[in-house]
Length: 257
Ligand code: SF4
Image 1 (cartoon, rainbow, N blue to C red):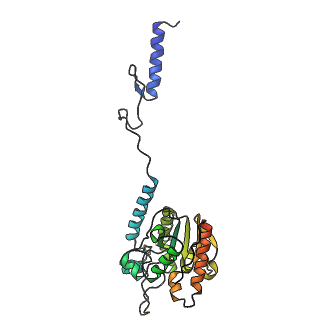
Image 2 (cartoon, protein in one colour):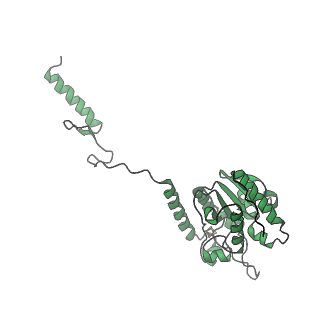
Image 3 (cartoon, helix red, strand yellow):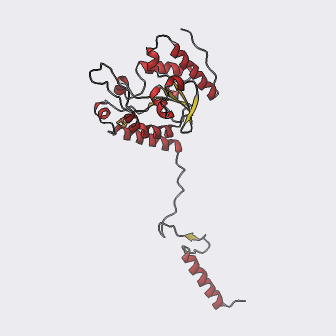
């Protein structure tokens, strides 16, 4: 049996080792109090609720949109734009539609695809069984490329340099929105995403993948507006049927008239 002096010595050694481990005192009848790493007397606090991942992504998208608003990487576009055109729609949509750049109507409204081509895109979206506010709509370049001086043209296409300038914004936006499927509209986004010089006529009609998102390429609605034969519209509908079948969705019957 250890005597009282032995017990006192053992207790002192034990208390010293507890102190070295951060235990500052041992109240009688209470659990041990462990010193926090921030400070010996930090009060106990309730654990923080886990962050809402959707709210965090919405916040990051808002921060990204503010960065775009302040961007001056393309001097001509920065100096001539009325406003930047970031994108509209919910995050985690079933499908997102990607164009090349805003036109004049979009530049004034601050929303992509609101002019004639946008109205046609809305009809295509509706024909697929979606409403416009169920899908995400955005462009590769966030500012309107103005018409070339003296050309009489309302808009020109964004240059490869302008697309490259804006690409980091587009990629972060795509990663935050996380559509289940992506549709590239026209030559410029299709070629850029697939890193190819092959034109849209040969790229359409197949599924690809971009940054882990299944990708379909098809004609831009503004091209359909110029196509008097109606053939390109039929091609786009074939592409949409491929998209819907790949998504596992029913193909709605075509409405006549
Ligand atoms: S197009 Fe994109 S990179 Fe160019 S100025 Fe606008 S936001 Fe910036």
